Amino acid sequence: MNHAPKTPVDAAVSAAVSAAPGWAAAPPGTRAAALTSVAAALEDARADLVALAGAETRLGEARLNGELTRTTFQLAMFADAVRAGAFHDARIDRPDPDWPTGPRPDLRRYRTPVGPVLVFAASNFPFAFSVAGGDTASAWAAGCPVVVKAHPGHPRLSRRTAEAIRAAGLPAGVFGLIEGEDAGVEALRHPGVAAAAFTGSQRGGLALAGIAAERPVPIPFYAEMGSVNPSVVTPRAARARGDEIAQGYAASLTLGAGQFCTNPGLLFAPAGLVGRLAGRVRDVPDAPMLNDRIRSAFLAGADALAARPGVRRLVWPDDPSSTAPRLLATDLDAFDAGAAAECFGPLGLVVAYERTSDLPGVLAALPGQLTASLHAEPDEAAGLAALAGVLAGRAGRVLWNQWPTGVSVTHAMQHGGPYPATTAPSTTSVGTAAIDRFLRPVAFQGWPPELLPPPLRDDNPWNVPQDVR
Image (cartoon, rainbow, N blue to C red):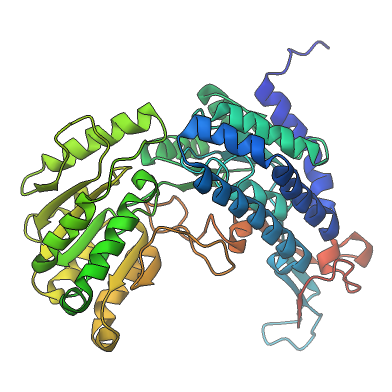
């Protein structure tokens, strides 16, 4: 029988499907060595990669070198997690004829890889959230092959990164790269893809989430779509540390030309602090944005926010085409919590308020957020439980006297939050818990030892933690 030639997408996904059983069964040492080999290959290509990234993203050499170091570090961290094996969550119940609900059989449960994962690379982190970024690393660590849909904002860098990955000697099919919007949609609909991860705009994320849900066999779609990351400054903190807070806010708001999903775009502050905030933001010069599309969207979004009823311009460039930082202000009565949406770039909205007791109801009406921050004096903590509870209820990460830009790659990090910040609020895209997205539980009841997966065997050949009862 003659078969139609495969498309590049079909070829990449089919190769991943073929590779999936072997990669899932590979011992921890094998998978960990592959991850560290990719990290070494990226380090070997550092000069080329940083130069290409600088040419395509307008980010500076210092920022890009730091981001590449973050990328290689997280590959190494996931390699350590693979060796430890705790993510398998292996649980063994021995037979118990006297179990209270009736005789208990031999039950063994663990988490196994879901299969090939499709990763949509991000624009604003060309290394850490791109071809060899956290989504790719965590899927590999889980035991899943990966097909990456390259971001159009840095195509040459994506191809060069893919070359470095291939030089690391991964098994065939464990990594594949595709390009183009149509290719990404085709891959998302491919029956061989078992899960997908995305970092980007809400519009793009929701469109792709719909496709994933409408497939004949729906798949998990993990989208991180950004937020306005509300921050609250109490009156006492404003009086005690006003200049320090204003300086920290301006630095966080304008870091990387504001092109961070954790940018503190919404600030609740006493009216007396507004002038100092404006002064600090006004001192920050303009900076190039990633590309012309993002620049145009930022300018349009800023104009739309400035035109809302009750909003006034505090810091605004004379040249409407400038990407210089912008700061807007309104008061609590005029603020519309339901309309709080991310404007990707150096734009902040300050909501002036008088009484801290007025904030919980307003904050509770906000849509889901990646982060929320509270700036207060230490001896105020006991009286801020209600406010803290509301912030934790709306965000995946809550900060005390810190600004949200800068997401540490560590074991306890949570980078995710209630919808619409993400499509899956129980997961994270940063830190070792990101592996959990690409695993599913399966239980074996009464099976012969030789047919059990290694994490569930009594001899425990992978030496993973086992909860034996």
